[in-house]
Length: 259
View 1 (cartoon, rainbow, N blue to C red):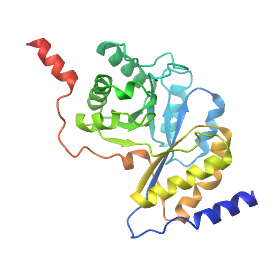
View 2 (view 1 turned 45 degrees about the vertical axis):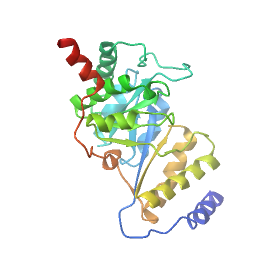
View 3 (view 1 turned 90 degrees about the horizontal axis):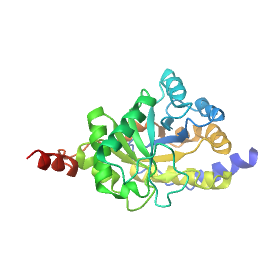
């Protein structure tokens, strides 16, 4: 513990100083919640840590209810088709689905995760590159008054762009904290998140409910405040669209069918 603390202090000394007094904010999100009872350890983290809850799981509603009781923010961690096509959830949205099937899947997901205020993609390296599925998703979110977090599982994602064009408030992930789930890597990514926040005024980090990740966050989140960085709920960093919503391909297709 002493070695970990010393390394953290020495590394933080290399973080760039704030150029001005503007707020510097970080949102940290724990994803893949709802699968395992042991993931409930995450509920011990500060309430400003946001949860992504997988829909239609045995613990989806239980975790959503508990998070809401804590006044913790939750979003739907919506399974979407990946390029590899492996390890996909039963309720994944596929590119081969009809518009109606996609809408039904989204509605089922929202019903299984009460109190959700947003949605992001679980996997989705294939689906988020495709305009029509993203337009279906954003039309649904617009109707429900939900925001979108682009997990950026591919550099070719269209999700955030389509969200903004559709009038849906949106934000993107900046850092995966535990893509490599060892303490040294988690620590390195945590520092990176802090540097990005100081550079741009805000940053979003996604992590998993791995025991080592939850332990690291429990021990180190307090250092954010020590370095002038506020831990905020994700909705605090979601940008409202700066331009009016434009007709999506989906709405244009509907209009042409009715003519």
